[in-house]
Every structure is written in C-alpha cells, then in structure tokens.
Length: 317
Image (cartoon, rainbow, N blue to C red; front, side, top):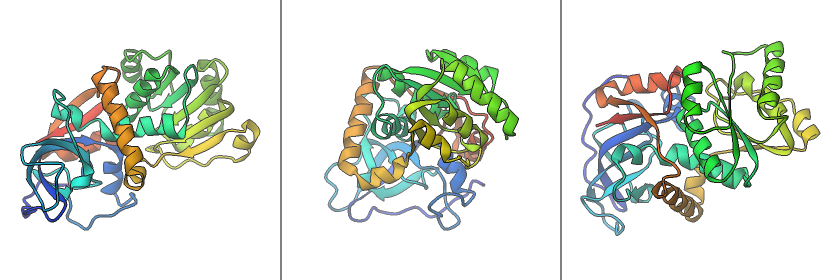
C-alpha cells in the first residue's frame, strides 16, 4: 500500500452522495480485501476502508434524505481511505448530534455485527452466558458490551496479559488467556478444559472472532442447545468435527452482517436504531485505542492484521 493522488470522484450521480471523509474505522475485512481473500475484489488501484464518517459535499438527483453539510456515517466495502468518497445515499446514515466523528466511524461494523450476531442470530436471552474469543479487539469489545447490555454473563478470552487487563476493565465476569497458535491436538484439549473451567462447566453462546484451532475447543464448552456464532477467523478457517453439534444439539450459526445490511434494509434500519439508543444511553461506546493519519493507513491495517490491536483503530483524515 502507498499514498497517492487519484482522480477526484466527481459529482454524485442519481441517488448518490459525495462525502468528505473525516474518519475511517479499520476492520478485519480491510485485511482480507487487500489480500484478495474477501468476497469482493476491487480492481487495482483502489483505496481500502469500508467504514467511514464524514460530511456531505454534494447530493445527486433524487436524494431527499441528505443535503450538503450533513454529517453522515456508513459502510461501503472499500474506498473510504481517501479524502472524498462517492457512494449510494442508501449506504449512509445521519450522525446523531454530539457523536464525535471517530466514534461514528467505529460503530456500525463492530457493534452492528455484534448486535446482529447475539440478538438476531444467537437469540441471546437475559441470564445466559457468552464466551467471547478475541475479546480485546474491536469486535470483541462490541460483543462484550452488547452482551452486557442484554443481561448476559461474559467470559472474555484473549491472547496476552495486556489484553486481559484491558478486558477486565470492561466489566467481564471472567478472563482467560489462551496460548499462541496454531494449537496441536493436546493443546486444543487443554484449552477446551480451560474454557469449561472459566465458564463454570459450559456457556450458552460462543462469539468466535478468532477461528483457526481455537474454534473447536470453544465449541466443546457449549451447553446443550447452545449457539456457536461464526463471526471471523483471523487465525484461519477452522475445521469442526460435526459430531460435536450433534452430541450437544447445538447450532453453528454464520454471521454475515454486511450481506444482511444489503438484503434486509428495513430490519437493518431497526437494528441501527437500537444501536443508537444503546449509545445514547451510554451502554455502548467505541473504545478507540489508536489513531493514524491517512498517510499511515497501511500501518493501521497492519496493526490489525498482526493481531496487535486492542480496542478500535481509526484513521483520521
């Protein structure tokens, strides 16, 4: 990746807006898309960055929801790590009054994914317990706060002591540090035992933000009828023995939040309204731990890809 000048995106077309980008939230799909490991592959050269906040510069014909000067945030797959972004108006939302732009650029993908995963796909109920893998990352923090807002018990699993200290400050019930992977069979069995001990014998949901050889040990600690939420796999795509969901009568549930946003716009709008209400009530708040200028956008993505991130990473423009 390198910083370069590209042609101005030009005036917005019908039902489009032109946005002066002010902040970009960095997420794991940004890591995948520059390595051609994502579902969509933009033609080179392209700017990565799929979660943004900024100010509307101009609107195209037919746009009634926004006007020049409006503060907006949204999701666009790629293109946000640039000074200006042209995209469909339907992909934008109004930034609530008083919300900082860096927090607006950190809300939709992580908190939206966590909320969709736990409440829609996982059907989380008050009093249930949730094991969160990768608990110190942006999606892990969001999973913790969403689970806590819905009255769940929370066990956070992380890869280092500094991450454990960070997660404890979020108010989880238990913290577990897992070893560096990949794990062999003996290490997986040992980790499964540690998960069961930390969860008091088992949990009702697993929010798996890690994947790889960590997924099977986490699945083994699910209670009867539990739900295993597939939310990401920076440690690799796991291989799961299918006798385990049979023996536990549990569910392995995929979480494709971006695709759901596109397919179920009315339902997604209701979910975003719920998120903003939780934000206004102070029950969720993006934990931005690192900010980078646009010229160091590649360093921001590298910090996430190397699994060094604690909390959310934002690029400011």
